[in-house]
Image (tube, rainbow, N blue to C red; front, side):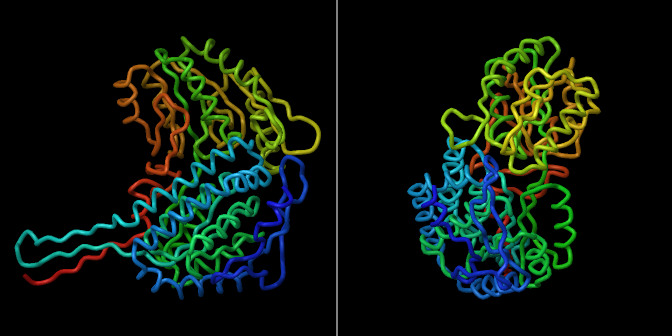
Length: 482
């Protein structure tokens, strides 16, 4: 463990070189399972932000002119290096974020796929050539890099969220400033070194960890050379960033909060429904914007569903993600535990019944057990707010219309889950849901080849899939006489 930690860069990456912050400032990164300090990382300043933008802007022209095949080969080499260093990356994620080591390894696989997918897409940048309908002009339509980008990633998937943004930017020919989350910067810093080792030229990727996100994002957003902002995080922060992005009319991709419903119809295969519920709720400890947040179960099967889900949740082992047999790690910081505790207390105070868990354990670490609530009223905070923890609140419905109304009764629209053995019913119900993602009889659907993003206040734009690279491109039309 110490060997891996000592190998991780802890400085700022600017113009291809690791350096200290301009004022020498650092911040501590802690292990949420033990509350021990893992490392001290350089804390970027406004001066560092301007230097990073100078590097990104200076490299943009030559990087945009780099042949697509070369950009693709860099991504391909980076994918191979991620696979070679998967144990190091997984260990770092477990240490700084808390997820069990098996899940961290799964994120290495998932995050690496964005490098491979966009390596394959980089050379498929096709425009079109045609005559105008009137026959008076030849049309040449081509795509070009949007330009320097600011990429702001969250703490919960420290590798995958970096690769999901960096890979399409590299493929499209954009330079970048990456701002990793304060709580989990080590994985992103290690990944940045991997990109350098894969041959990424100096200045293309610059990385600015910082104790204060606004200290580095504010001057970058005000810089007229910046052309795009990509952010993954909470809706309130995203709204603030969108307001800042208007001054320079930036292209934006915003992957924001969620309040995912999981709907179980009376004809559902309950084995699949419980499997899906466990995956959708407890993957990443529930600290995911796609996590099932509200469970709506048909009244005729709710008792059996709750009994089966309770049996599974009682078997969840909470502890340090490095320990054998642990399937649920800590929450990322103390205030996350406080928030989950308050949500459960609010639900119980409004009449919900605790079936499993519900009690905060004593001792070090930011732990909260897998918790199942039933008979949760619609006005409980956990049915309206994003839980971001291992709590499953269950309510019932009678009709399909009621289920649709309950599912859509939120300002968010990211992920949703539906369980029914009638595929026609499931697809028809999907058309009624106001969500960008739907898992039909499955609890985990994220994939590098699929477009990821939400509706309503869950954001704008898409990441991954064929759509992902277009977020980093401008479309240019050239008209010529015939």
